[in-house]
Amino acid sequence: MQIIFVGTAGSGKTSLTKQFGTWIEKNTGNQISFVNLDPGCIHLPYKCDFDIRRYFTIEEIMKKENLGPSGAMLKGAELTENLMSRIIEIINQLNSHYVLIDTPGQSEIFVFQSAGPAICDQLKKSSQTICVYIIDGSIASTGTNLASAISLSLATQMRLGIPTVNVLNKSDLVKNEEIYRMLSDYDYMKKMIEKEESGTMKGLALKFVDAAKMLSSSQRVVQVSSITGEGMSQLLDLVQESTCECGDLS
Ligand SMILES: Nc1nc2c(ncn2[C@@H]2O[C@H](COP(=O)(O)OP(=O)(O)OP(=O)(O)O)[C@@H](O)[C@H]2O)c(=O)[nH]1
Ligand SMILES: [Mg+2]
Image 1: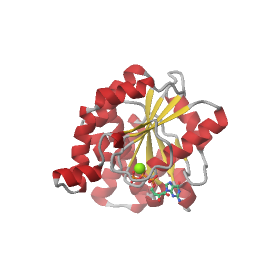
Image 2: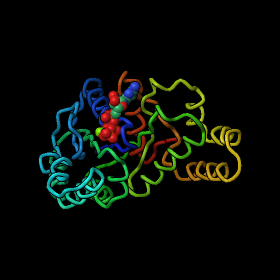
Image 3: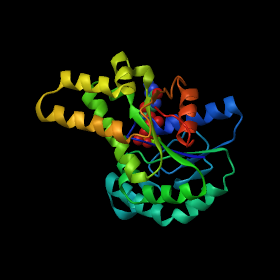
Image 4: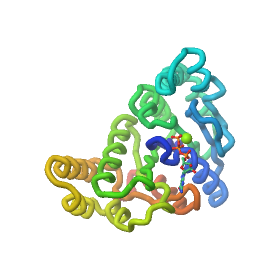
């Protein structure tokens, strides 16, 4: 199975990739492979079985092409797409039970450029492939704020075309218990939005929640911490259920 970690900048993609992979190896004995598709990172806490930086880095592109960081990231997405058959070939040769794939810092680079969807399209032909969408717990504070995070997850699911499950990372930093309740009960999230907002914003946020209710692969949002290791077993359950046609993800 291939698991792709996607989330906004700094949400914990790299830390969760490492924590989840290490946890699986230790607790299930299944073999893991780590794949890094972020050409912009400097340090990685895991040992890569495939690292896009073997081919190019954002720093090199910036110097060579005289580009700023965002322009270089776009160029990086283009280069990644050109290398796609090589990347897919290498990933397919990794004979592990789980291949964990870390993606570029800014999620829009992987999700909204063509490289990410193209890679997912190829990967799902060879093996079950799912996306773990990471909501950053350190900035989750209100119903409206969660509704917008969920809408990004839905957009990711639409673009990548693979089952997508949601996790709330940095749970060690979340002090507001209401956040958990809202994430496990969209009707409660709507009630909170009714209280928080008025006018157009309220209408918009409520519509996002309705769309999420209708379209999400699962409403269950697992709370994890890449620092304390909380929630890894629940995340594995969710990942496994997401690929089981008979599974109940509610
Ligand atoms: N407290 C806490 N901090 C976390 C957690 N997960 C990640 N962080 C911190 O958040 C920051 C970003 O973590 P990364 O794992 O680099 O996040 P990322 O999404 O890979 O970041 P980019 O690739 O740069 O977008 C680091 O300082 C991490 O230590 C968590 O569960 N709890
Ligand atoms: Mg990262």
